[in-house]
Image 1: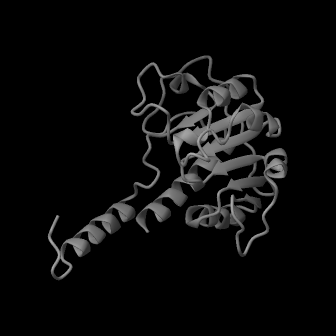
Image 2: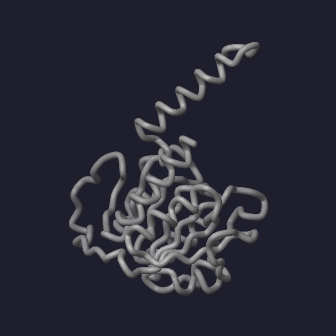
Length: 207
């Protein structure tokens, strides 16, 4: 699926970007500012990443993370096959980084709220390219500014497109991209091919 391939790539790119201390908007450089701290990264090999949601994209992300030499801890709302699932509290407490891969439903809205953010180990990284409503943005920003979190990498937001004065754009320890986690040349070509195929189904109407 185009979105799975493109999205897993964006998640894989944002995780090392956050680990490397990269800051700013993904679609362009932020003006130089003396307030920006010097970049100081961490090595991903040997680190632990928590994968919250283990559908197609979560599984693909886990394989990529393992390729970086990371230990993967999985939590999913339902039983999963092929990978040991750990309790949510354990994943949050042990992970150096967590990446969200869940659909937004009534049950998952606000999933990563203030209490769960507080359960994350100090210095953790949070990556969300799934759905904005999964995280309490205000609580996330508070934890980042209090330095409970090392970095956040976000591709989705409560209000889109981001206004020029959106506080996320001035966070030196946030990597921000513009809700285009799936968009690669390859994914775009596959989407076009799928659209053409559907339009040309015998007896179907072009649309």
